[in-house]
Image (cartoon, rainbow, N blue to C red):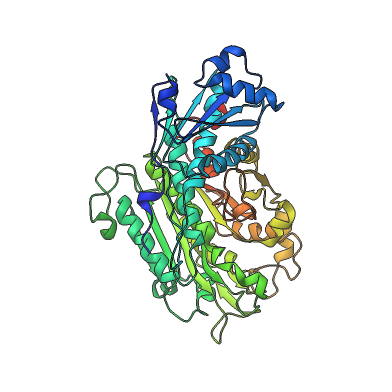
Amino acid sequence: MRLPFSSLLVPARQIGARLTPAKITQYGCAIVFLPAVPRASDWAALPFGDLLRELYQRKGRKPGDSVQLRVGARAQTLILAVCLADTASTFERLQSAGKLARIALEGEPQSLILCASGCAQHAVQAALYATIAALEAAAFRFATFKSNPKPHHPPARIDIATSEKLADLDLTLATAAGNNLARWLTALPPNTLDAAGYRRSLRDLARHLHLKFKFYGEAQLKRLGAGAFLAVSQGNAARDAGIVHLGYRRGGQPPGAAARGGQPPGVATQPAVSLVGKGICFDTGGTNLKTHKGMLDMHIDMEGSAVAVGSLYALHALRSPLAVDCWLAITENRTGPLAYKPQDVVRAHNGTTIQVIHTDAEGRMVLADTLSLAASKKPRAIIDYATLTGACVYALTERYSGAFTNRPEARDLIEAAGTSSGERVWCFPMDADYDSDLESAVADVLQCATEGKGDHILAARFLNRFVPKSIAWLHLDLAAGSRPGGLAHICTEITGFGVRYTLDLLRRGWPAVGRPAVGRPADSQ
C-alpha cells in the first residue's frame, strides 16, 4: 500500500484579519475565539456578533463553552464561538480543541476559517495551534478495506484570520503530518504491513524524502552478531525480518543517492540524534503464546517504529538543522518449531549474553541489538520508542507514557517537554540496584524477571546495557500509544503518541543534541 503523502494534511494558511459577514459566509465553518468574559466590544467586532452574544448569554455559558450559530442564505455556514478559559494546560487546550474539531467537521465543510476577537495574543495563538492540530487529526482518515467505503470529504483548506504572524504554524502542521503518518502506519492490518511490506513502504519514504536507506537482513545481522534480534525473528515463516536504517541530513540527497547510500558533499555524517523504534508487525507472544484478547490488537505492536518514522517526517518537513538517524527493528514474534524458547541463551550485537525467560518479552530483545547498532554510529543522543510493557500501562494508565533516561539530571526537562507538548510523560527510577533482579547464573543478564512487578523499570535497566554511557539516552514506554476514545486532540484509539513530544524535546536542545531542532521551547510562546 502506498504511503498517503498527499493526504497527510489539509492546507492551512494565514490571511488578512479583517472579516465581514459576506466573507465569513464563504466558508463552511468558522471558529471564533473570545476572552473568558467577553466585552460588548469583543462581540461587536465579530460578524454576527450580536446574535452570538444573545445565544451565549441566553444559555448561561461559562469560560471554555462554545455557542453555535448557522448563517448564510441557506444556513450553510456554521459559526462556533468559543470563550477561552483564562488558564489551561496544553493538554487541556488540545482536549477542548479535539471536541471543537469534531463538531466543526461533522457536516464535512469544504473550508474553515479561524479568527479571534479581544483575546490576549499568547492565549489566542495557543488556541489556534491546538485547534489546527485537532482539525488536522480529525480530518485525516486511515486506510480502508471496505468494498463500498463511505465517501470522505475532508476540507480543502483552513484559513486563519489574524494580523499577528503565527511563527510556529509550520511546526504545528509538520507535527500533525508526522502524527497522521504514525497513526496510519500503526492502523494497517498485519497482512498488509508485514515485515516485507513495511520495508517497501520505508524504501518509498526514503525515495520520496531523499533519505539514506539501508536494510540489514537476517544474513547480515548474523554476521554482525545480532543474536537477540535473530532469536525473535527465527520463528517467522518467511526470512524477511531485519533492521532498517534511515538517515536525514539537511540539504537532502540528490535523486538516487538514497539507494546508493551516499551523501552530498559537506553534509554531516555523524548523527546528532538517533530515533529507534520497536517494529513488531504482529506479536503472538511466541512460545509463551498470548490469549485471544491479548493477541487481538498486536498488529499495533509496531507503533514505536511508526512514531520514530513520524518524528523523522516532521523534522524533515521543518528542514531541521539536526542530523537525524532512524533505526527500526522490523519483525514478527511468531510461534512454531523454530521459535526461540525460555532458557535459551543468546549473544547480542555488543557481546552481552542473555538468558531468555519469557518469549513475549521480545520487544527488549529486538531493541537491544537495534540500540547497539544505532550507538555504533556514535550519535550524541538516542530516543527509543516502544509499546513495551503492560506494567507501564498499569502504573500510568493510557493517559501518560513512561520515560527512562541515563541522564537523571534531565528529568525535569524531560517531563517539562511532556507538559508543554500535551503528550505527558512521567520519569521512572533507573537506580542501578534494580539490576540485581536481572542477575543470571548462566549468562550476563536475564531478559526479564520471572515475576512481572516493576517490569517497565527492569526492561529499561536491561536496555540500558546496550547504550554506552557517553550517549544521552531516553526510553519511552508508550503506555499512551493506544487508548479507547482517543487522547487529548486525537479521537482515534491509536494516538501516535510521541511525535509532538519528540519535537518539543528537541526544540529544548535535549542534552547532548546540540542546536535546537526548530524554533524555541513551546512554553515560551
